[in-house]
Length: 249
Image (cartoon, rainbow, N blue to C red):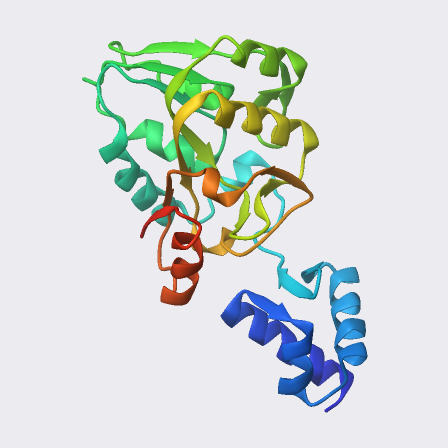
């Protein structure tokens, strides 16, 4: 098998299975582990996969700005938002961070909801303008325009005085072993602090974010109380459930 054919096959396997192990690939492709590792290195250098110890993960959705992401998989995000509504009750203190799926959620909140919403996302705070029964608290910081969230030491310090019943986390990438991760160190620190000050955590993730990783770890995947997703294969769902996460798909 030629190098190009072999690497194309690796990408096909990753697309179907989300994760590959070098030793397993060498048997399936009938080549040495050294050859497989060189292939994985090449594919990683091309930005097509993410190498990890012993193998590789899918690269997951590309990094694009907030406004572009609003038009991607909007129907799937809307369905995830509907599922999350069941966990939101009157008189709760709810942390909601940035993300286009979270924005879909707040757009669907009933106008009658009586709760306190705390967010570091200007678009989410603005979307709650017509919810007159909600108290909306905006956490300040430096605006990270790519994700349209406020970040930095001021954001983290403000969270020290908060105790939330529920944190609704926008998921960038998640893997059952590696954890929840994001491209920005500052965003990972804010998300981590939000986890620390919340009694329960819901993660909303479209299926293309599962079994993927980025550069900065927020927390272990089992920090989530619930993972709300869609169209997840049974074996992948099992991996997350074995971590003690309630998976809702």
